[in-house]
Image 1 (cartoon, rainbow, N blue to C red):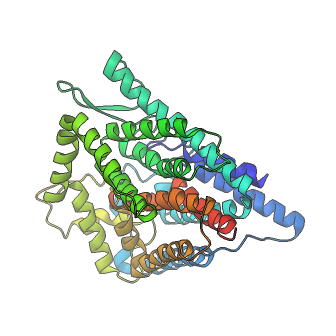
Image 2 (cartoon, rainbow, N blue to C red):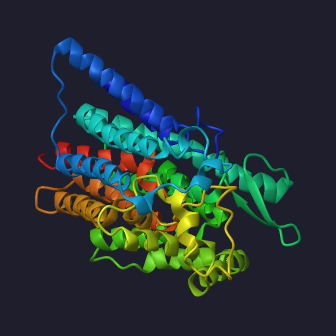
Image 3 (cartoon, helix red, strand yellow):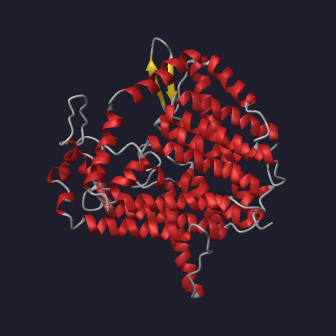
Amino acid sequence: MGFKLVVLFVFSVFLLSSGDTLKIASVNASSLVSILMVAVFLFNGLLGRRFVLKSHPLQLPLALLFSWALISLLITGIVPSNAIPSEAYSYAWTTGLNHPDFRGLSFLLRLILVIFAIEFIVSNVGTKKKYFTVVNVTIMLYFIVCLLGFLQVVMLKVFNVGFGNITVISETEGYFRIGGYVGEPQTFGLILLSGFFPVYALIKTGSDKSWFSKRFLGIILFLAVVDLLFTFSVSMMIAMLVAFLIVRRQFYRKKSLLIPLISISILFFLFYTAINVMVVTKLVSELSSVNARTLTLIIGYSMFADNPLSGVGIGQSPLLAEQVSGTINQDFWVLSFDKSRVPVLNSYIEWLAETGAVGLLILAWIAYRLYKLAKGGGCSGDCTFVRMGYGGSILALAIAANSSSGNFYTGGFALSLAMYVAGMKIFKAD
């Protein structure tokens, strides 16, 4: 039952949406599967009178991460300056679990579900056969997602028929952004990012447990790159490119980067007009001007500056954003805090604002433990696949976290972390 739930969790990771389309009561599918994992763990523990999870290098820092999130939320509850302003209770979006009385607790629940999913996967994926079953199911689902995105592009470009989520940028120039079945193009890009490196690593290492030929895996990568280009998500493109170059350099130091750079140059030439208009111009504008994104970063940093130790409490930052922004000159931009949720559009600054310096240090400790786990000898073959595939995925998702909020609560992040740790436990000792 435990391993079947792990496979079900893989399915749930791809059932991600930027709205409530693929959610139940605003709860993501991966969180619902995590709740089932908790239920099965408790049931089996009661039957066997033992509650045991396999130990691993991230167990202590993850437990400390949750503990500090809980403590910091309790601390902020007694700090007068962090009191939720009365107007937040009448915001259009503060209903259900987003209500000021429940939002902090709901985010604590999201965090513990992500952590438990990691624990459950590591404990139930303990053999090479099980490990590569999860890998192959992931790649099969990733192919379906990439094919759907590619069909969106072809149908609209060739037959002028649109389906799924497509955002038209310019009717006259024919520019559009695809969002797959997810909705928001950047969120769709996050899914494309999370599955790219396991496919790439399987091509390079050629594991005998793969269900797919290298040619078919190459087709999947081609579809993924085309899809990512047509999301026109600058942050996701940069995250994939930087992570790819780092991974390529790490594992192929003696080989030239000439081939990947030539491939990138060809893609840039083929899509020059679109990339120049929708990517380069957008990137320059984001970096050289004060806009909605940079204003949320200023708000997040201001929250941290006022509460450097404990932050304002997990999940609380959007509730306090309007109050904090009152001290910032907003002549250049107006945000509608009452009409829609305005998060800090950088997961690191968001975490810093909500859990303070201590929370960020624990996050840095987790990153250090992941780095140390990959160091040392005894790592070849399938172990190299783990480092390249899921290590690359974690790196790409970590870079992408600089451009959006809540990345650490996603099922894709949990799956990548869990598969990295489980893989190193299984294969590094081989």
